[in-house]
Image (tube, rainbow, N blue to C red; front, top):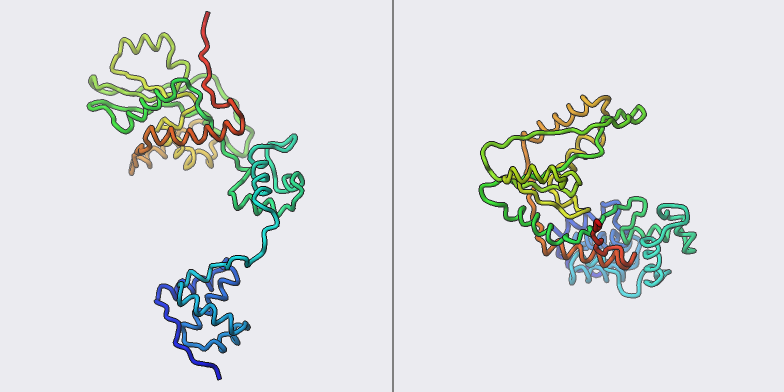
Length: 329
C-alpha cells in the first residue's frame, strides 16, 4: 500500500504555467514529463500512482515532487551538471567555424551555405546549421553598413544631432533629400529605361523665418552658383551630414516607410500610377501623422561606431581610416 503524502502546493499561476508547458508543441519531453509529475502531485495523487500512470520509476516522482516544492516550477527546466549529451566540438572549434563564416568566402561565390561550409570544415551539415542558429548567423541575408571616413565626421555629427535634440527657437528645421531608385515598373513586363531629366520641387515659406536644412554632401549643394545664391539669401542655413551617413538624415526614416509600405511591393504601369500611389500614401499618412523623434546622443553614437570600427579593423586593417582630402594644384 502506497504511503499517502500531502498534495504539492501550487498557486493558480504556477499550475497554469505547468499546464501550458505540457500542452506546448515545442516543450522538451523531459520538461513535459516533470510538469506532469508536478501537476499530478498537486492533485493529491500518490507517488506510486503517478509512476504507474506515466510509466516511470517511483524514485523519479519523489525527486521532482521534492524539487518543485523547494525550488518552484522553473526547476523543471534545469539540467543537472554532467547530465545530457556531451558536446562533440569544443569552444575553439566552434569559434573557428564562426570566424570562417564571418571573415571568409568560398571561392567563386558571395557567401557560404551549410553544405559548402560543412565540406570546408569537414563536419556535418546539421552541425553547421546548429552553430549558425545558436550564433544567429545567416550568410545568405547579410546586411551591410558603410562606416563614414569623413575627416570632419564628429564635427558634422555634433552639428546635426544638436539640431535634432535642441532645435533653434523661431526657426524651421527641414530634412531634405532626393528619393533615388524609384521608378514606375510593372513587374509583369521588362524593366523600363530611365529617362534624362530631374524632378524639381518648390516650397515657399512666408516671412523671414530662418530655415535650417539638413542634407547630404551631393556635389550640386556646394556648387559656386548655389553658394552665391545662399549668400544672397542668408535665411537658408545648410547643415551637411557626414559622407556615407544618410542614416543621420531623418527624412530617410520616412522614405523607409514609403518604400516598405507602398512602393516595394507595388506594380506601376506608368509614372502617373506611381505618382498617384505616392499621393495616396501621403494623404493617408497625413490623416494620422506620427513624428519621428530623435533620441540618440552624440556620445552613444560615437560609442557604437567605435565598436563597429574595432570589428572592421580586425577584419580589414586600415579600412576605417579617414580619407585624405584631394588637393588641387
